[in-house]
Image (cartoon, rainbow, N blue to C red; front, side, top):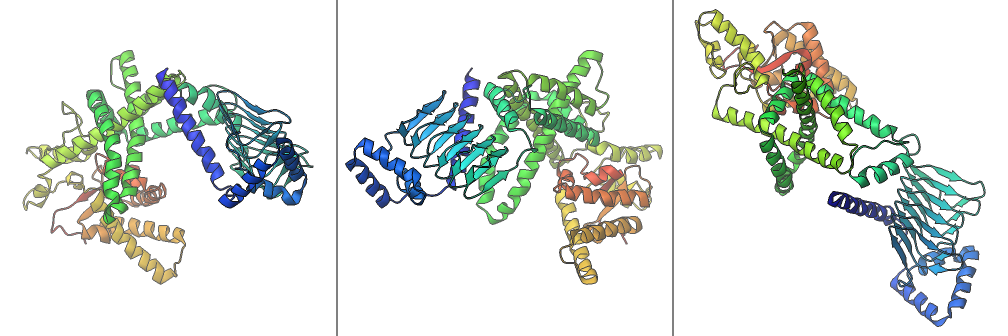
Length: 559
């Protein structure tokens, strides 16, 4: 019950803020002198005479705007505000402002200011000097409106007697106008029909969010379920593309669910402080967008992790064995969670809890990896008891197998450069060498981008044709990888591209990798940012082409 009340309070606050935002750009009220003069003249006249004067102003087009702007704020004691039920001004009655929250507002008399409804309909059958606004509701106009008509997530209907002296604005709704209706300043539609259903959104808010559940079954909610299945497909695709990283995060969550939740709570509490500290420095301001993108990626991958964890436990209860593939676990877990989201109150609590646990599991896995890297320990293979770092196992196992086959002990990850540089030792595959981190690879990429940009500018008179630049960058990378195994930027940072199976790079591999680079860049750069979160420091294009980037020892010829 308390969760429901908290949800409703938060929604009311958001809707009121949205209403104020819709009204913020409306014409400003009259000056203090005008308001004082109007108030004095109003006090001197009897009530009946005042009503007659108002009626006269409504019939005089020249005085209309004067009525709307100079007499709207003359009396604050006659406002009608209703919460939880409808608010109505009967015929022949007058009011200043009319507001209804969780109810409809109807003006059948005279309103000197605005008529506003939040989660209800606004109906105007009598003259209104201000604006007519409905948030999550419809607006029906069949009288004079002095200023604007605004419907947020609702429809606007203008009857034959409608005369709007301002704009008609509909956000995610439709506008139906009678041929006799008059709109002086035009009709504006923001995301009109076809984007989604305003009735469906109101149904979702009323029967979903207000009851504490993310999903609800009803008419006009095809967009909601479509979005849910699109997100589930995205989570499943991530598990397919990054099987080892997903399995590692699921294993971390399975072993340490409590610690994952604690880390998530600490991260949520400390993130505003971190952003503030970055904002007070000039260099930190440039890091804030990257930090926000990384947190967003961690949240998405965290949801994939927690869904895979739930699905994996279901597979374990059924067969008693490990999940065949993390993607299958994510799919099953997602379907189960969607059913739980339909339960009032519980659905909203589960949504928040799972988001926190998944986010914390990803952060905890990254912290463990950073701790192992700092301590200089060797990343264990996938078959090592007590957990593994699957991102490094594929590349390291090939070198270890080669050394064992030669009759020696399997070299550690840190010993690979020395072994490769030994004068009489058998050369180890490139896949056994250390893998550079995010910033090293970004530095090499920056140099390559500068070189290609200058060449394209000089040779092709490139101005703003990004397609030509991307094509040139892809061709440059593919040729350099095939011929030299690296680029000019890679040479400066001692980097080399290698295949996971230790075979030489061929044209199909470098072509797929070059095209994958464009995909990694066009996806808001997420494919490159993935280097920072992947256990094996692979970008998306590395995973597509089956390649890795290694750092060769100093002095190794690259040209």
